[in-house]
Image (cartoon, rainbow, N blue to C red; front, side, top):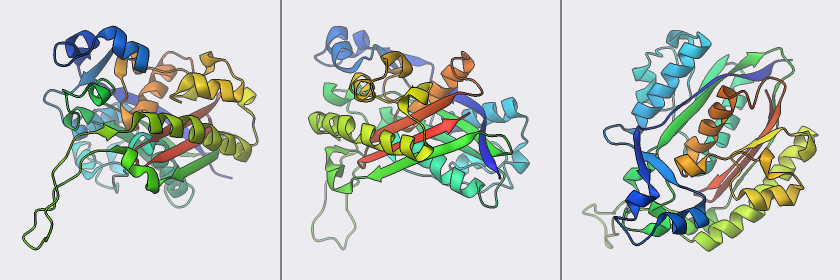
Length: 306
């Protein structure tokens, strides 16, 4: 029976660092206020790059690591990336699920790869600095830019996706919004306002995360027929201490990188995964859990053996 294997990973972070101290010159805040509330000291933002630039660099790095040539790759990200890496035989598309996007993308790719396709490139890429009001400390201090991805292919090895749980709560979507476009066509009776910036109900999002992420993880664990004790690492389960306590696990099994990268949304899980693989903290034979939550509101949890 064919299984799926994560073959290679890569990440791309913009060079420009923005520290909490620098933000304090732009708004009423300081490093202590930000760090005690978010766990973030700095984040990276683009200066000349676009989202597709970051994603394309990730794709190129993965191809170089894996030895797969672009003319035989079937990536699952934007058509700009497909053009930039010369993947002429691949089809490409975007999937939007905010911070859950990487898990949702892995789910879609896994379904495709278990049918007729051999390999897929899944990239989470975010340039949130374009959507942040840099005078609003309730949102500006949280986000950073970045991209990361993995190459997944069919294998006969006893590895792959063991269980998952995806959930969407559209009725709660107004608690975390961005990119609202104006309705300005000449046929409209009511002209809506343009509002590209992030807005969130922080208390409701926190309550949502601490309630729904553990429930989704529990379902994924049960589907995989493993327990939390069997899992070596949970890659980027935010609201870490609450979730760790819920499963009776040490916080050390919940690595994070928000202190240096901030919240990079759909790129977060992939960035951390690549860091952990690069440091050999995660390696072949490990069972790991991915969990993401965010705009939508959405939740995604998966259990993988790599």
